[in-house]
Image 1 (cartoon, rainbow, N blue to C red):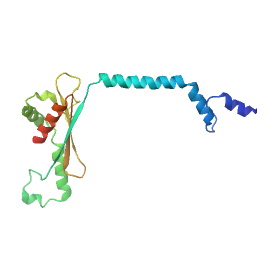
Image 2 (cartoon, rainbow, N blue to C red):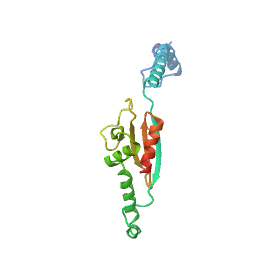
Image 3 (tube, one colour):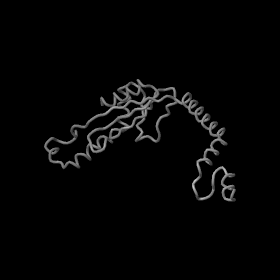
Length: 170
């Protein structure tokens, strides 16, 4: 056997610039099968542990449409260029998360305002690990449309739906 071929056969994966041969790859896989299987089993066990010990999170989502800009009179609304009116609609949608809306929604639901968090105006979302029901709310606008979406995450599906409906009612 020539020297080059012997060197290729002894090494599990070639370090030469040529591509590894299929035989070398299969040999490497079979020699390290216990490590590969152990890694797969460890990953599956970690996934099951995370599923069992992390809190369940439910999400309720609602959509709304801005038909007309409320603070413009009808006579001036027809004279606005399309881009200006679209910018005003986007500003209106993105202006929904506010401390006033938070307190109004909390009062409407009969809960404390600390249980509601608008992700856009708070430093960080509320912890969904607490025993008290909390809701993390995100308001987003759909690009190039008059549509907005409200997404509410909570530990309870019913509470998330109540908060989303209360926001849509306002």
